[in-house]
Length: 186
Image (tube, rainbow, N blue to C red; front, side):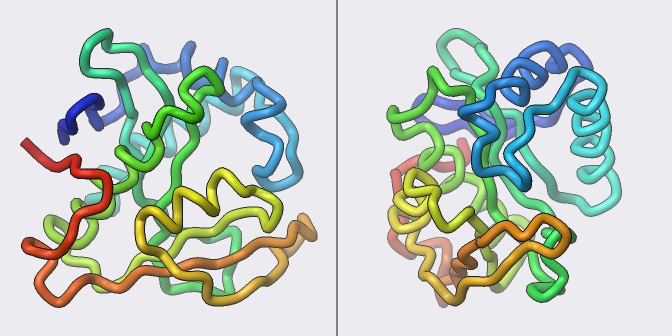
C-alpha cells in the first residue's frame, strides 16, 4: 500500500466490483478506451480478477485508488504490460482511470506519480511508457506533469484507434530526483 497526501493506493478487493463497474459503465470515462464501448458488470468482474492476478504473477499491477479521508474508491492507477500494442513490447505502461466526479482535482497526477516512484524505486524499472488516444487531452496533460515525453504516434491493431506513446526513463538517482506532485510512500 502507498499513501499520498490525499490518496491510498492499494491492492484490489472483491468488494471493489460495484465501484469499478460504475466507472467502466460511464460512456464519458470509456470514451478514449479502445473502441469507446462501456463495460458491463461481467466484463468489470473479469477485469477485477485480471488486476488481482497481475499482482500475483508480475509483482506489479494496477492499484485501486481511494481517498484517504473517506475511503471512496476513485478508480485505478498503476502498471501494466500493454499487450494491446505489440509494437512497444517489451514494455511496462503507467496508466489510470478515474470516475468522472474525481476528474480535474489532480488525483490522476498524484496517484500516477506515486505509481511511477513504485515502478522506479521499488520495482527497479528503467523505463515506463504511457499510451493515450491522440484526442485525450486530459491524459496528455497528466503525462506532461509526470515528465513523460511524446515518442511517436501509432494505431492499435484490431481497433484502428490512433494513439500517442509517451515515455519516461528512470532518473539517475530516482530517490533524490524531483518528484512530480509531491506524493510519496509513507
